[in-house]
Figure 1 (cartoon, rainbow, N blue to C red):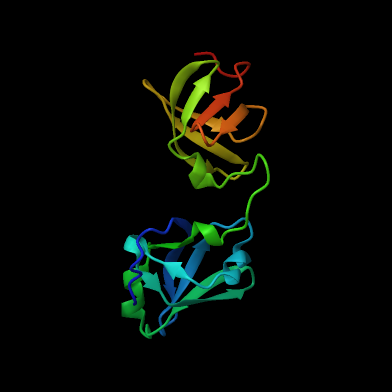
Figure 2: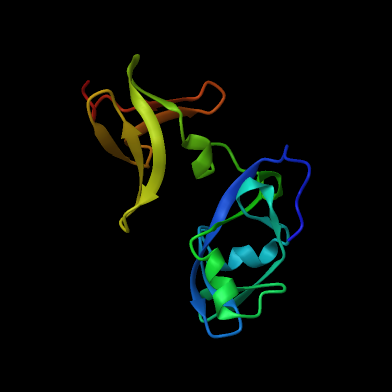
Length: 169
């Protein structure tokens, strides 16, 4: 595996290696794109610590698997199970107004009216929709990711404003 020396790139997680598949080193992949096949559009992938990984993705029946160059055994492939797969954020499409990448929302301060109630830990999906996980001073709250509950997201100011009709702090 070759090492990327720039270390100034802004990497974003797009997938995760799952269980190994077969005996020749193929690995199942869990994609985080809205359409898992979108991973096939990219060519430069990285592991944590900016290690570039030469990988080829294969799509079959709406499932994605990967073949890492020079990995030809089940035992060697097992080392990658659970590892996240990154791409450079700059290679992602530009977003329209009021569209955000999930990682852009992490660590934003959350307000109801003008009172800070916590900070976004992460954005998850429980099957029925996306929600923000917010760590407050006394408890953690879950907020549906929709514009009924969220009044405004200000990435530049690193703030999210919740609808006070739903939240009373």
